[in-house]
Image (cartoon, rainbow, N blue to C red; front, side):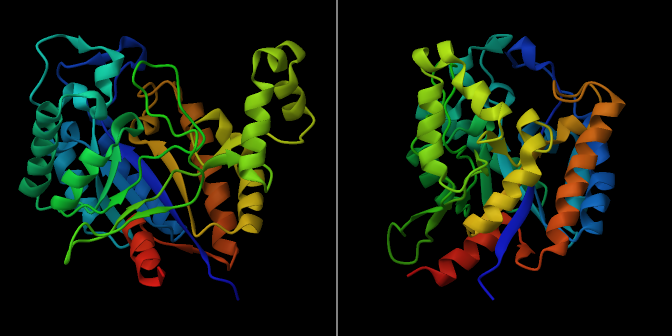
Length: 327
């Protein structure tokens, strides 16, 4: 039997706010965190592994911190580190920060390090030691990764393959695919660092070919001919994401069938904790939309549970396996 494809559900575990309001530095609301135990019970029913990438706002709230500590004690659960630099102390002396400063990698290193120090201290004060990381807005950098290694974090799950976006200073992952990337130890006794991307791609086997093809179709000439829409409507190829809340997740079952043939070493699902709360994120404004997201999650996870060539694992377990088998 071939090597199993390991899979994990990842949750960006954070405050809820109006995403259209920018990146506020003021007080945060974390009422969505109270919904995580019930969500975890659903995940446990399917035997899946879950990583809760948790930020400072959650751990700074006593009720939120208690929920995360409760989750940390459960089997197949990992608590990873997440950071929203705009509301992580030390705070900027303004009500909100510009989009560029919402990406940790754009801040002066002294400022970025201070915010990472604050977040890591909140973990340690909560009795938690993270080994995995996802930057807010998918932000990372070699300097951030060196800090993480020194802090005992050696799995970076920030890469969104084939993507960049229009915000000033956004990460550029257009040359990255689904493959994990290993950064060798810096010195004797040091850990390797593994970049484990989110699972974003295309509903055809030749991922890089179709990435180039759809980006060409999105060019000025392609847009005039509406090629992307034609390719999508005919079912020839479309973008897809293992994201329970995003519209691209509606192609998840087709994408999973492609991934089963492609056989990457792992796949990771994603959602925001705030999407469990109606109105907590722009994806789910009503109870019905939350229910639809959970139904999508359960349909996908039930299918994987029934596929013997898929195996649940946390992101650190996936990286540990990759390191053990690395040649």
